[in-house]
Amino acid sequence: MKKVAFYTLGCKLNYAETSTISRMFEKKGYVKVGFEDKPDIFIINTCSVTENADKKCKKIVKEAKKISPDGFVAIIGCYAQLKPREIATIQGVDAVLGAAEKFRLIELLDGFAASQEAKVFASEIKEAQDFNHAFSMHDRTRTFLKVQDGCNYGCAFCTIPLARGKSRSDSIENILVTANEIANTDVKEVVLTGVNIGDFGIEGGKRKESFLDLIRSLDLVEGIDRFRISSIEPNLLTNEAIQFVSESRHFVPHFHIPLQSGSNTLLRKMGRRYLRELYEDRVYKIKSLMPHCCIGTDVIVGFPGETEALFMETYNFLKDLPVSYLHVFTYSERANTRAAEMEDVVPMKIRNKRSKMLRILSEKKRRAFYEENLGKTFQVLFEEDIEEGKMHGFTENYIRISAKYDPLLINEIKEVTLSDINEKGTVEVLEPENGLMAHG
Image (cartoon, rainbow, N blue to C red):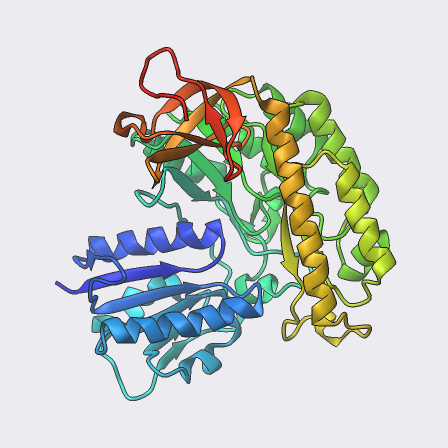
């Protein structure tokens, strides 16, 4: 029996797909092992959001060949779709599979026998029309459930439509079958994931269902304590969906809503489908219904044409807005995007300076959000995340919790009172009545 190891770069969607592909291998009799356990086969699932992700892929291939010099290395994922021929020239790579082929790799790479030249299976992205069902299992406390793939938007900076194709979704009927299957395991939390999940409901190129239909249906599933919505575009997050989450049984008060820029000038240049006024409206709508709700956002700094004044528009907009944390991305040029051809390029030194400013702002926003919730009681899902005698978990509104380690608490949801913020920026909790946990 051949041993196979997996390495995943990038987003929650990639983790869901890697986990599903790994189960396909196990059903065929392969033995899943750790990356360092001298596997016969390495499957590397790649991301290509930034240039740094491409470099990481090359580094992982090099490490794989150190561990198993004769190991078969297959590259899948977004980078594999965008640059298959380039990847095929990397020393140590045996096969490259694109978006339409990655779920067929066992069939296409029959026996996983290395040849002198890397095998390339990468159709044009227009061939990636099927929705491939995927969810993660046994990898983390949470399960990532893929409900949507691809994107019909054409943001000037983004390669995802080129890497994953047009927007397409699973049916609610199929998703409910999977959700009920997950409910029969010990999973407590499911995170809905996709490329553009607010665009859920397109099958065969036609809209058949909606995101609101989906979350209403999932909220009726018994046996899953929490559903969490991953990143959702502000123009697709409707007031009806926000209202539903505020009243739902299982959907938690946490939204991650990409902004990218607080400047309308840059939003238009980026090709985004909203302006800052709509974004602001969504944030305040959420906070009016769920004052304790956590709101995260994505921001790109250094986009072509971002002057100091336009950057400060973004900075001040976010400073005054009740968001809880920022994911800050330093703009990097990507081939075959409109932004790569734009003038008024921002020097890297200035991009880095602005990124640092926003990351500092993010820490301030996160701490302020944590402080607002001290003394309040929440439900914490504890994870197998142990560090220096402490274990960690997250409240329903995404506050990271630190507590004295107790093995009985792993994958359990416990009610706790938030006590204090420690030097590492996590929140300590008071001892619950059941005595399972002591003060941090």
